Length: 115
Image (cartoon, rainbow, N blue to C red; front, side, top):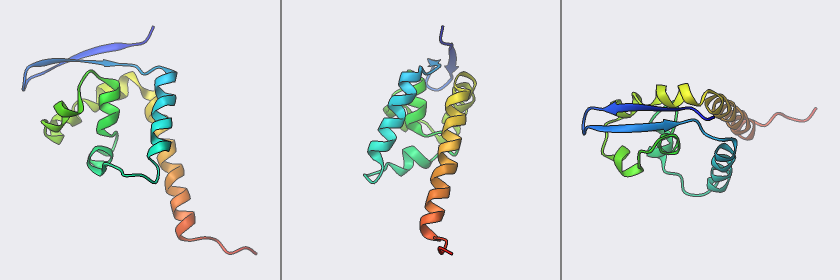
């Protein structure tokens, strides 16, 4: 049974439900990333927070992107530990993908000569 947790936000008062992602949801997330590669990227959504994107938070909770847009980054940051608690494997995969993409980008920028 997948794990679910609720958190009560103070402003505006609202109960937020977070959920553990299924394997299918994680696969769909990766497919979405692959489709976005080379396309237009929403740098605020994808890069505002270091640990997760805003779309990751939307995926793991019942919050909408509109609701996140009305929140301050400090208000969103308190949501990440709950997301991480319920989805440690997702965050581990996400971290590894970031490392791989950095390695690939570095290799493309500084190719090693063939000996």
